[in-house]
Length: 145
Picture (cartoon, rainbow, N blue to C red):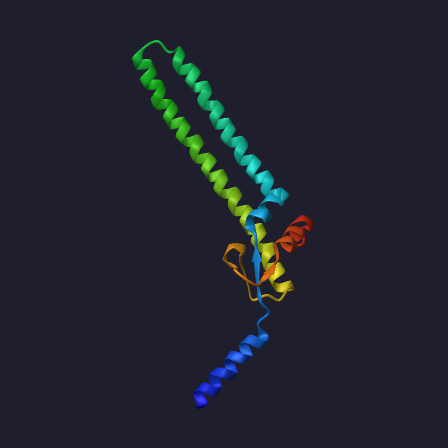
């Protein structure tokens, strides 16, 4: 009986201190965050440059007259393309990580300021919770994190 009473007291005590759960629409934050938009634009520009590179190489390939020249050209171009593609993937990963880290820092500040226990993605909330999406967006816009 004492164990049951102790468990009920502990359960009631933890619920008394619980501030709640917040939820965030990460995609909405990204769409309204200038740094995220800039990061996407940088990656898109790099991808476009890679497409332009391949179009130019295709024109050069068509101008070659012997099968041996074409084979050598393909080998060199494949190596160059791989290097450029790897650089694009590295840039994309780097930019995504920078955006995520900045959004996470702002979200952590909102968590503390709103005295929340946790913040989850909005898609896991069925009922209840506090939408902090706009708070995070405003914090990112003002650079207060």
